[in-house]
Image (cartoon, rainbow, N blue to C red; front, side):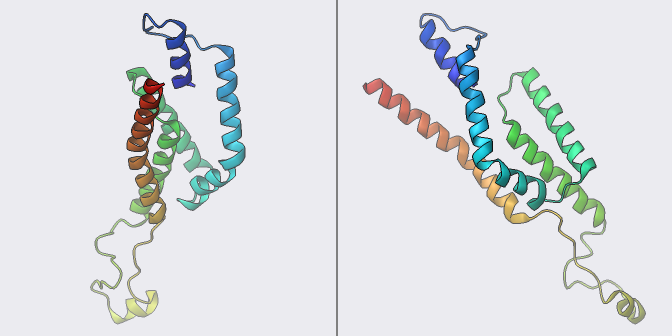
Length: 170
């Protein structure tokens, strides 16, 4: 709603730029409709990916994700930084998953697949060899989401420049 409120404010008083913009009720209604439509269309898939497929979340983990995301958004807002609460929440899910990996694999360097420690025959028989590092975060989601984050800023910049250029010509 922020960009739309800024545009409406600019058209309302073209001679000056306001430090704070009052958001009209119709702008909030458009924003609420857009959020509801987006959640209705893409919400279930997004929730499934973030809540189950990146890494498994239970109640305490989800609480840590929500609390850290809220704190991060509050700090960024206080500093006046434009942030995406969705990106922050997904980053928090990655953080919880990577911490779980680290805590469950304290000797991560020693437990590479195929790498053997000083294992006696009895230990090898009992544990069937040295186990590999257990990955609790699915790497393909890390790569695809990071790529989307990197692509979003230049793509939106190019789109905004194109729209601006088109509007200037009109």
